[in-house]
View 1 (cartoon, rainbow, N blue to C red):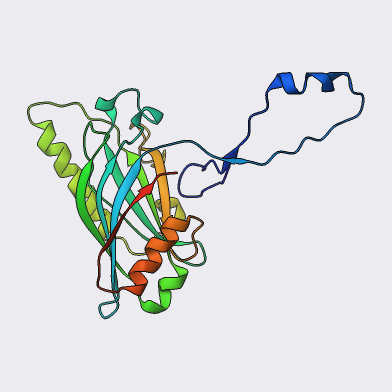
View 2: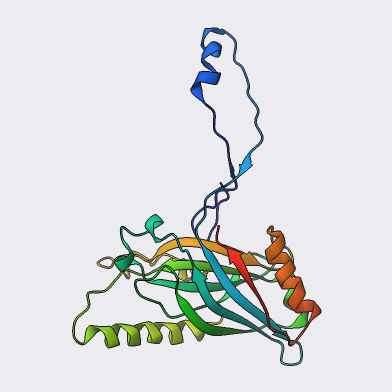
Length: 229
């Protein structure tokens, strides 16, 4: 497992050991060490379509959260009607400190949400190599639907989004995917489904190539599907 300060741990690899293959070891009196190669995790959580572009003159990077498909809502919810996905984007500096966070509005009762929302981050060219974007797909607790609550809940979601986009530099405790117990003792917590990281130093090859593509072609929007991990 790969521990993550800002979201749940990620499964890096896995191995299966059938007990029938080691039953003969039960008669040994000395300790025996078994070594195996880890196989990549086969867990599939869904994919997200992202569009990235960088404007060097304006020193601005745009992250377009377009849509997702085949999100495995059953990992975080008992049924689809309780699944209200949104995307949280964290801008992480070279020291590991989150310097800004933003999020999309949420969508209700769908494993294939369409957002078509663009989040703007001010990013100087001198910062590009040291910054990493962490995108986390979360679900908020479903709200009871009444004759008037639908519009009100969507407005509340938009208000939360506006407040989030005004944040500049926050302490790590304020940036957790999970709400604090002090402020939300009587509320259900948002749940984390999957994540992906973008930057020139990230582990994923496709995610790193996507980042390098926008650096090589400034002002051009480069879109690509990425799996959640």
